[in-house]
Length: 301
Image 1 (tube, rainbow, N blue to C red):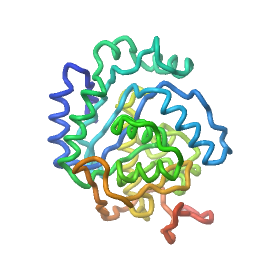
Image 2 (cartoon, one colour):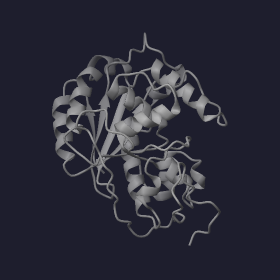
Image 3 (tube, rainbow, N blue to C red):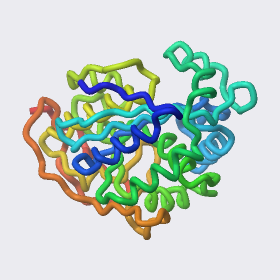
């Protein structure tokens, strides 16, 4: 497995230079974020409008702590993993949930070091966007990624979250273009318990081992990249079915408008289906705003 490259204020330029070189061959961004928890928790059965209202309040009120990105070709070939440690979050002053901070500390997050040695988002974002503007066909991969997309969107645009879920989907379509949510994919895949399990459990079922520590963005992004590659090998997988579908919302992320970021565009490329695996996707349906991949139970062959 590839190493996880720690990025701080002192080495951000050299790491972004290497990151840019890797983008010439690897266009899948498996990403994860760490953030200071939830000020508002959404009940499981809450309407989407209220769930988004909670998300907007949480993301607008708090700051990203860490961004992990693993570059791959969407198959078995993983280039490298970067863990960008940001200095913007101040534990003494900024809003946070204590239980989430305690969890991150137990998982090795050193908030004092981040504040002192991390990279400022004001330094990172212009350099990162300049790199993205040079490449096309970028595809973003996440696990249960609604909040991850929201925090990256806020990071890149430096604006509050859109007012409604529909507007969020429109802006996300412009910023990200092509997005895959592994948890949504697992929901429509025989053998993965309807997707009602975490990333670690999905990885265990698929025989994928973690490198690094959970709740660290680099390790989580690397595990997501490996799990995604394994799932793409399953019979019946088709990118067009799953692209743009996020777990927990019915509004699909798509390429409906021009990008708001200068020269940063990413038309989708459909990859060939690979064969075979022990877990089998159901047959492709007619694509709808929220595609139903597996309308009835099916027996694993």
